[in-house]
Amino acid sequence: MVWDVCSWRDTGPPISLETILTGGKYLRILSDRLHSFMSIVHSDGLEQFQQNNATPQASRVASKWLQEQSFDFRYFNAPPKSPEMNIVEDIRDALLHAVEKRSPPSRTPMDL
Image 1 (cartoon, rainbow, N blue to C red):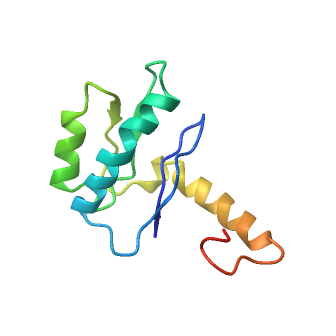
Image 2: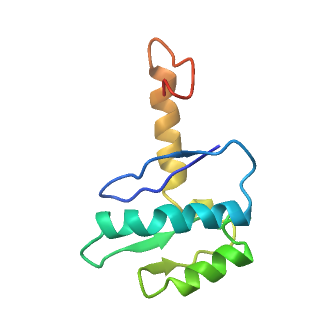
């Protein structure tokens, strides 16, 4: 599994996850990566964070942390498990299509 953050301006570095994503692991990713990405990409104060509220994202620890960070960036609180409101599904489909068209195909995750 891979976690990534993106905006209409830029994408963050993807994080490869070797295990199942839990609320605690998701919180560590947010606290380690989200602030730096938002402050660099959205230094104009227009930052707004959105997620699709999968189970780890909707966990109590992650939700509490996002509420505590509300002074740093706006958080769009989507309905639970609502990928249809998230651009990530469209980006993933475009990425999968591009990967399938590669010649020769990638042999390892690092090749990708």
